[in-house]
Image (cartoon, rainbow, N blue to C red; front, side):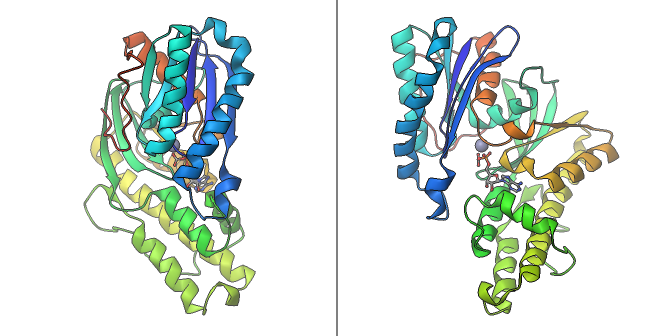
Length: 332
Ligand code: KG4
Ligand code: ZN
């Protein structure tokens, strides 16, 4: 079995997965959302301190399964340096205590393998990833040959939802709250611009859209002057433009690259409006759409353990003293 630890942002997670049949024997996650809400975003030092409390609590629950563990996997890149360190230090301690090797895992590869929890990921595979930290299109020839073909020029998709949620006083993280509010509203009400429309670049940008949402609120004289209907119409108009943008770029990618299959991953891939529009778009290009189960869209350790099965088979081991933490790191 592989024991995997995830602490790249504000979710403390630990999972143990069987290498042979990929079944999960233990999984635990402690979300820190409520602790960061009052700050309107993740406070790295607070997140690190909470990981230092939460990860040992999860390990305590996982103790009955430690005897069969053959390797310790841990997210070491990319993410917040201070929070990644908490997971890595625990992985080092476990590796030394249990005399097992470490498998360093790239967080984005983990999200890609959320498409294959308990099963296989057909290769080659393309994917659109939309989370709070990343918005990108990736191409994977196999586990050890991946590249980013489109990235964001400024904010990430989920981050834009979080910032819009903050403007609408919906709390943090606000992606799901914006989606729920949008369901009650009319997307035709506000004419928010779809970013980079007509721009041939395969790239994402959300800062202009976020700003238009801010201006729309200012146009009322502030949030307090907006009715419930105004708010839900704005949420719907924002969500519609954000989805139109990432799918406009995904359409360009599908038309040019014609992948056989394309996955949708990352915390924001739990958005049902995005999931259904993505599925329809893939069908238009004859690409098989792949989705992660809703419970594995946001950060979790089961996806890290699943990716680590590939790393284990390839012998991608690392000495506990040699593991490197990188806040930014390209896919490879
Ligand atoms: O993958 P994830 O858990 O963490 C990162 O690696 O960033 O993604 C979290 C992000 C947050 O920005 C959250 O607001 C967004 O995903 N998100 C959503 C939805 N559910 C979560 N965004 C839009 N619609 C949703 N339903
Ligand atoms: Zn993530």
